[in-house]
Image (cartoon, rainbow over all chains, first blue to last red; front, side, top):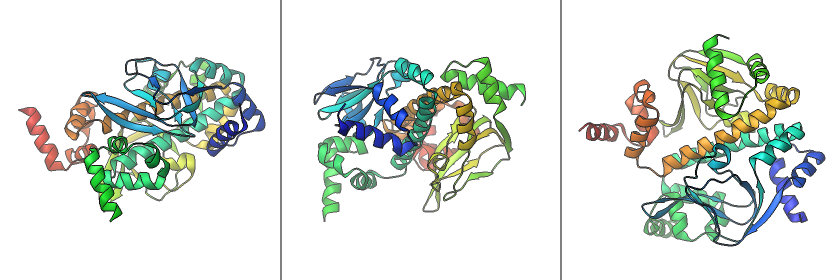
Length: 193
Length: 193
């Protein structure tokens, strides 16, 4: 693993909980890196995936197909964790995951995770802390979505994830904030004036 | 702790991961139960709370005050876990938590949790599994909300949490699904016909 990737992993993890040098080594040793090309489907609706992953570089969209239309519910970028429902409940996926760019990610599966946790109790309590904080992040995102209009969501997205606006086509941003591309064009025009 | 409460706790936990008899005892020994009266404010906006809780009996609403109006983003009932953001990040709460009924809950705090996890590695990996599955549940709820109209949300709520429709005043259900009480009345009338 190169130094840049090590740095992204450790920076992400230490944001959530203090991490010792030993734990750092354990995590890096037990991790598998894959590079995915742009436009690759990682997970299909109906498919059962036993892999979760952590994005080191790149962008992945999550979407449902509703009446043949993509409804995007998330864009995952550097430093974000993606845990498909089938990873934990073993049921077929309700949604698709597809790369928007070439994406480098760290992959894990529940068996190796359980094995590593039983070998290293320190790792288990660390994962517990990280996932608890992720719950808070996801809940916050949900509240923000529910409590704002699409225009406000667009303004917040510009403030909080300005890179996303540059990386993702406008019609996909529109899908994500819950409006038609024409409405987003109007919002953008209004905000520029 | 009485038998009914023990049963609710164990049933909830074993839904998420296999639980041994010893672990059952560890969890029950380290748990503190409180009874809250109806209408009690558990958490205020701006307040820092270091307690998370698990509902054994009762109902708690979560809401933001927006221009003096309550915007409800969750109703928590039996078997649900409530982790305020301040529990994990120590920052002031962005929302209120208030009981809708007399509520009996199991309370925990991060210090005792960390202590118990370091004493019992088995507990740490168990908490890791439970919280990972909670992430999937919360993400599912978010997707459902985003991908449906208020009318569809009301129909789903009737199917998935029929008890809630009985327990909670209609104007609060309206706030939760994101519409005005008058609009919910129209939806209900349409669905009855």
